Length: 151
Length: 261
Image 1: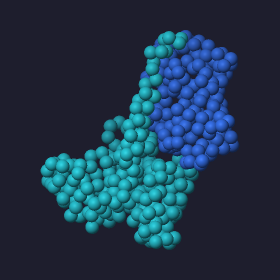
Image 2 (image 1 turned 90 degrees about the horizontal axis):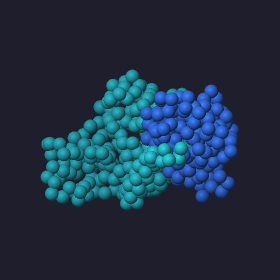
Image 3 (image 1 turned 45 degrees about the horizontal axis):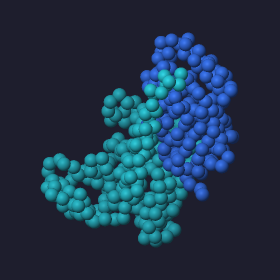
Image 4 (image 1 turned 120 degrees about the vertical axis):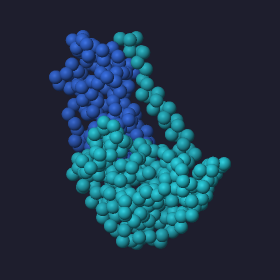
């Protein structure tokens, strides 16, 4: 059945294939266009470099009027990522705009990796280390980068 | 590592889930836009309330009917779109002008920096709705029925709201220097647009109304009905001095559509 959400997700997918942003990729799962798998490659010149982080994106029929639920499947040590992989990012909550598409969501999460916001922490240890002990923070991040090869 | 992260419960999701439950309850009981109802149906909500009873009487002297909209934060945009398109059904000249303006609006928004890919999706649906009430295609009764059906189809209805929000946001950006004066607090226009205008379900204030009215060149009269003194409703025209084509009633937090006698 074609609904506005499904129609729009087909368009999002087409655009992601035709004009893929650097360092991210995503596609609907085989039998359900409402659930996507995505990968974000750790941005260069950050401790996340070389990491391949897997995510799931779950849409509802209210997309694009409401944001999807985005979650890291790979373990990510980051001030704004919860233990369950949930992401604390304003555009996925109260600053969501229906003009964002999957491509915009993934690139925003990618830049969140480079620029954490330690003032609204989802992982207080990561936030504290990021602010007070950058070397230790980077060590912990690199550990999850290595973990991401195995996952 | 596992343990030290467990105290960080994912609060955002809990809050969002609760919000979704409340929204579901409202959407299950109230249509997006209701049938026409006599104005005095408001009395049932204010039994024994002298202030509102006298204001409803005042309102009934000027207006015969109203249409309720779902209180989901989009009520101003939805009410505005419904009432104006309903006006256009029987005004071919205004319709043609509006359709032209609608066609051109997309390029204008793209020039203002809106992402053309997603904009296109909303614009197409918006124009489809406008075309479906073209006065030259059918008689007003059939078109009104059509309009009512479209606006109670969540997919179409919400896309129209989104597009009006984008037009409003575009106007705020275009005339940022002017609108900056109306913004309270430390918001920049940019922040205000992304936080209070573009997201769905965010309520509208005067600034939204003024920006939308001037973006579309449409006059709106809002009748204010609150607990204030005087026993009469107070009318306010946006923009001032323009003949209103859309009539709305505002009760604190909510807009519905009015029909003048």
